[in-house]
Image (cartoon, rainbow, N blue to C red; front, side, top):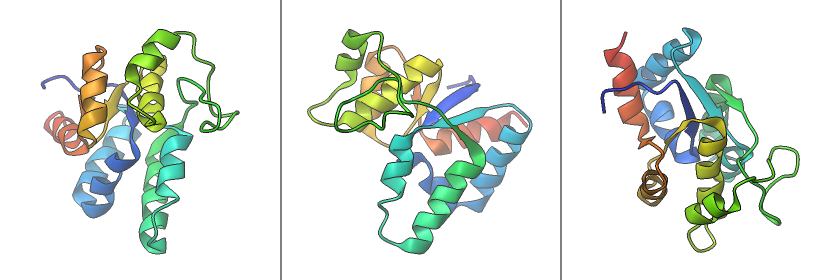
Length: 153
């Protein structure tokens, strides 16, 4: 992967490497402040990180996400799962259904947000990454993104 994405949607598991490795955080924070990459996140990531049982880790994960990224509406709305204000009504239901895997609504919502925002997806979830790629989007892990940004400084 030799390109550097301009915009990415973060899955909640993409934040852990930034908390665990301060150097990675600094590389990403620098790229964001220089306008080289825009990090986007949805209420899905906030909701998932808010469920982390360790209070200190939860705080660190949420503050890291919020400090680096920008909240955007999900690319679709799922009754009983989505929050009304931070969600879009999907225009392309066939594309949304292609992302769904059983009852894994978050997978479909993160992927559909990538489509709506014209952004790549950053995730450690191999199933989500595979679905994203099978539908023509790009997916990468946080360590891959950090490496690409570090190489371009």
